[in-house]
Length: 485
Image (tube, rainbow, N blue to C red):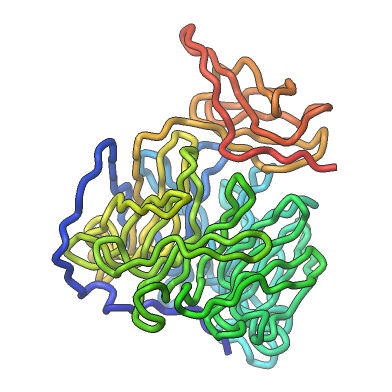
């Protein structure tokens, strides 16, 4: 039976490195919160910025429930670091949320729990098979679906909002032979299994989130399986027809735990947990680029030293065009607690921060870029809490001097579709355009504008013009908005 990976590489905390961390100009790192178990323990997943300007995330364990080790939480944290738990799972409504949340246009969140719920199939799921849920920002939770093993087991990746308004995702196990599944679920909770992985050339155990392209297809990774047993990159249609684009062979990377990100030119970037130029079985992971047709280029092989070790989180492309990510271990600090890094599209890597245990350790989650231009993230362990042996995890911010922008929720829609625009100082907004076409809008708060896709709009950036104290400024969306039919 498939089980979610438990990372203990290099003892997690006990590997010492001789390298010294180098501070970079215009870099500001701040630990915002150390978890204390009662407010959560072991945050695994990336944060998401809500329409209120705050950040929302999950912890794998902890919380105020009757579960022996806590069933996990959903929390809200302000940019200044004030944390509030808005949900503690109790097992029956889910447990162990490894994945992050996504926000719908109405402001509600959608997520999965890796175990828990009420679904079990002849005892095949220890602690039951996992759930899909919705959650309001105030903490009202509704379980949409309980997995039952035949339709999937241990969903570990965040859902992806499809252009059709439904949610698509994967389970890491279950299905016909316990290799995982690909599914779609409607906003009201009707789930359809679209594909069952076989563990052969198509791969096994998809842990990373999917990305949908303009043609309606989804792209993702499997952690193992494939022709060489080291994992795959695949394309799958919305009705479940799969194409394996690449099978890793170790020398070009192995075991891609994270999902892909698509750049502005249409190619995909990702990371592998192991493999690379330093030996198939004794290396530290890679960063790669792959075209939609399947041509893969290894951009960087980690050394396991000051540059980091074992990247398992999905990259993001920031407003400067570079990619940002994390490594679980390695770095130049005293303990091998992981790094935050920047890598150019051509493969030049810069370590931005090395974690030192007090500010976090075991960086399993990726970064997000807030509309203020800075980055926010979590660490699985570390921090200053004494409630956990090596700390219960942290939330942090990292600024490298990038400016503010706006973000749309969703990032695609047809003419007339409702769109929310997120930002940090929007009260002085005087115009909103979709690729140059003016739209009517209403300013709801300093962090939110409500609008709709105007007639005549075409694919391209959304721009918001603001005037504050006589100073005019134009904020551009971080990704192009796609106008669908």
